[in-house]
Length: 188
Image (tube, rainbow, N blue to C red; front, side):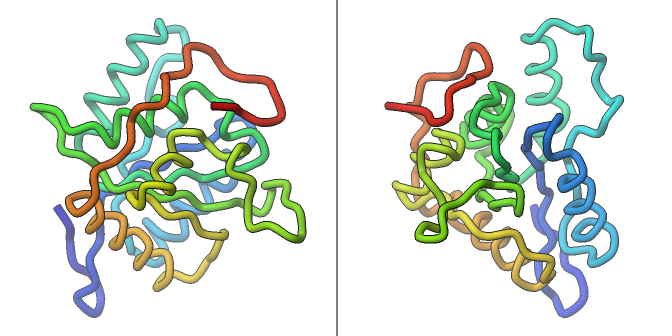
């Protein structure tokens, strides 16, 4: 479901996936800027304190799936220096692009944060972004962008991801992470 704001531009329900320890400030800024200041999206993300950190991993996953992802229509992955290594980021992407009896598939996009290490000759290294996101960029289901504070651009990216969710089948074949990873890059 999309809502309208301003000049009849769509507002979508967005879940933000990110590396909590490294990129919390960017996630907070992203939501403050686009959900509150410019009102281009409705945040469906988990907030600090929403889920008891002492719960079992499977219980945390179920709560995120049933209470947050279920109501979202687009998942935005904020990509910093170690985002690809996080098992919860992998799981959130996988859950959000899965069509189920109780939840429709979400659109997907990635945003490269200023903290992402890059070589001047490349936009990004596909093996240092979340592998499930990479696979979906390759099949055309997702796109990746550089960090921007331009509300019109971000709103367009979100809306295009929303539209693609029903036009292109996602690739959810990458094996789910069991644990966080620690290497510099992932491999197929």
